[in-house]
Image (cartoon, rainbow, N blue to C red; front, side, top):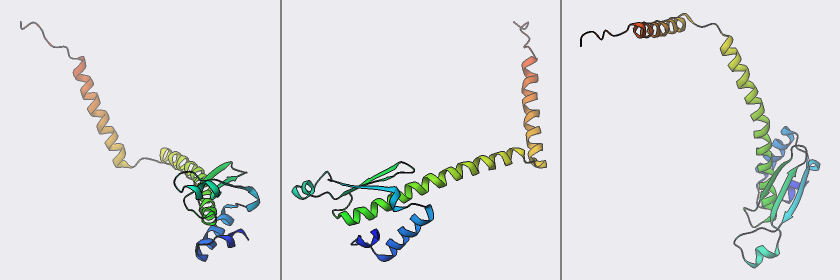
Length: 143
């Protein structure tokens, strides 16, 4: 399998990546992988080798490009890990937004406690007092 070619990565990390990809339903056939030349420092070596890895998950359209390490194999691993993290964030983000919306509706529908009602009524009384003073006009005849 593709994970066996990652030199410099421990077995536990490889297994964890495989498990998270399987859990999220990310298949290797859905990933478009390209190797491109890295940019930045490195001189002649960087200009000759294609060590940067570009991945695109076709169903979601999420793209990742990594050139952190000099090794192509290590960059392949890091790119896949970043891709799974992005997809996981996208999936869980939608769920959490939906959950927040449902919880907001529940809070709005929930009956207020006695203490909360009293607090609201006390605030209403204060604003009523303020409004009473607005209707009283000052007496200007003293001048």
